[in-house]
Structures are given as structure tokens and as C-alpha cells.
Amino acid sequence: PITLIIMIVSSRAGALTTRYGARAMLNVGFVSIAIGMVILARLAVDGTYLIDVLPPLLMFAAGSGLIYAPLFITGTTGIADSDQGLASGLLNSAQELGAALGVTLLGAIAAAATVDLEDPPASELVTGYRGAAGDPGDDALLAGMAACRALVRAKVAAMRKPQRVGERFEV
Image (cartoon, rainbow, N blue to C red; front, top):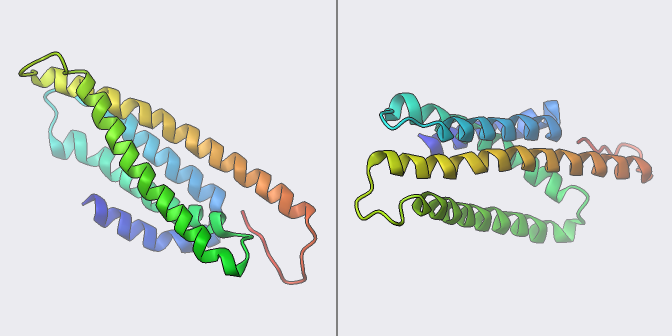
């Protein structure tokens, strides 16, 4: 269901970005990701998938779907036409590398909680996953704030630069 939610939300994210601006979509997306991760960090040992795991994963997926379009739009805005493919490719590579690195680090954090146990009980496994989910929730909020700060700087720089008639820069 996660991939499906990302596909559905990201297909609408471009139109939402046009309507509300990249900053608003990044704020909503990163906050949604952070909330999902924080809820996952509170996972109970006796929790169920449908009640305790699926809802925060869906929030995470919706947030992820919301941030893809504005990130690519802002990442390629102002780039010369001849360099658009290069910029888009670099963004895509960074996204893929970041996801792989993130999963690796989260797995390492979760495993560190049970490394000394031969047959860890469920409570230890959940503790490890709580630790792994809590830190990225904080990171998502920080990433959102950093992205919005960069967008504000880009907008200020764009306002200082003379523009041609009819050219528009929305952040």
C-alpha cells in the first residue's frame, strides 16, 4: 500500500505545487513524514499491523509523495535548458542513494539494540525499531526546515535578479 499511496499522491503533487507553492508542499510533506516516523517510534510490543504500523506508514507515504514534485521543481528551476537533464539526474541519484543509505542506517540502529542477544525477545526488537524510527522523525523536521530556508533564500535572490516580462518564479 505504501507504493500505491506514493504514486497516487505524487501524481497530484505537481498540481498542488502549482496552486500552493513549493514551500507549502514541502512543509506539509516533511511534517507528514515526521509525524509518521514519530508515531512509529511509539510502537507497542503488542501492537498490530493494521492499527499501529499501517497508519504511520501511510502518513510517511503521503508525505513522501508530496515532496517529490516540489523538490524536483525547485531543484531544476533556474537551470539552463541544456543542463536540465544533468540536474534532474543528479537529483534522482541523490534521492536513490539517500534512500539506500537511510535504510542501511535505520537497520543498523535497529540491530544495535539486539546485537548482544542470541534470540532477542519481541520487546528488544521493538525497542530497536523505536530508536530507528525516532531519529528520522527528527531528521524529517530538520530537512523540511532546511528546504524551506533554502527556498526563501532562492526567492530573495530571484527578486533581486531582473526578470524578463512574463517570466515568473514561484516558490
